Length: 181
Image: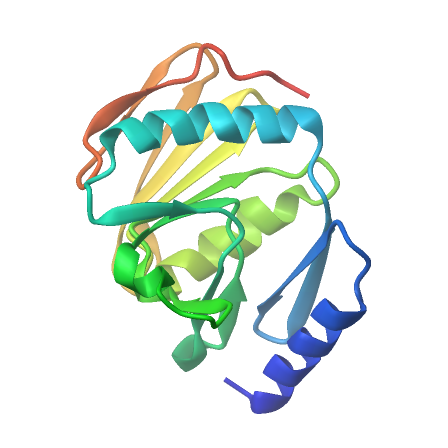
């Protein structure tokens, strides 16, 4: 990855007011405002289910920078699960290929970031599962089986249905308590 991009990213992080986060994808810096109550509620409901089924060697982490310098990406999912040793660092960046899943809740102000940018970037970054909760459309989508260029499987359910989350979690995600925007 271009070192100038990382320098810009760090400068943006220093200058942003509280409540903002920033990511980089190719040559684009993406800045986002803090999430709403519904966003946080839905995320916590999803997280509780993942927490109950996560292998003991994986820890949840919210808003961790996942970086993949080889493909020029730095993304910050709402939730990810990482090996505990990956979080034994004072650095604020973790290699993306260590993530077992990236969970995103679609931002009503920037839905294309979740539906386009991250659908494109996460398989390139070696992230095996991408769960996308879209409270605008009342849907949950799981992208899986990446080959380094794209995901080869997509499963969609509506709020109220269950979605099978594969290994290493291996459970049925219940979506009936998720709230729409």
